[in-house]
Length: 178
Image (cartoon, rainbow, N blue to C red; front, top):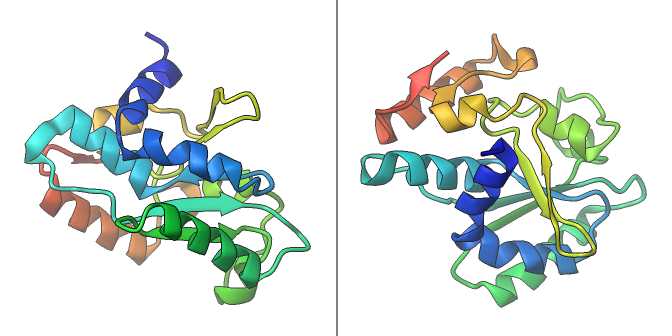
């Protein structure tokens, strides 16, 4: 089975599959749902109850060079009103460097996601205008499906990446460090 189809099958029957259409209706430019919601849903599906990683929030990345924080807050408020029992983190990758010191400016949503801490976290999913699933997997899906925690190239020496990896292992001992 194709890795994208496998990913879609896991996510479609989860809170991700329920919330993805609502995110699509926001019409945020060049948006992707990525991060822990995707990663943890897959790892729970693969490793079962032995994996205590759960969805903390839904990381929605988009890119609007003219956008501002009010756009992020409005999208978050809309989703929170629809899904009050879930948390949402909506970030414009075009303005990322403005509010996170030391970060370089990104050229696209994909550029931002590629810089996330781990390869299994840098996986994006979205629905296009026809409701079809699309995937952004700059490092492939092998690490995600095999439970491998590997820093992205830019984060190999990042202490935060190593600390997060340790917390993942505590909650899901079946995972492995690369």
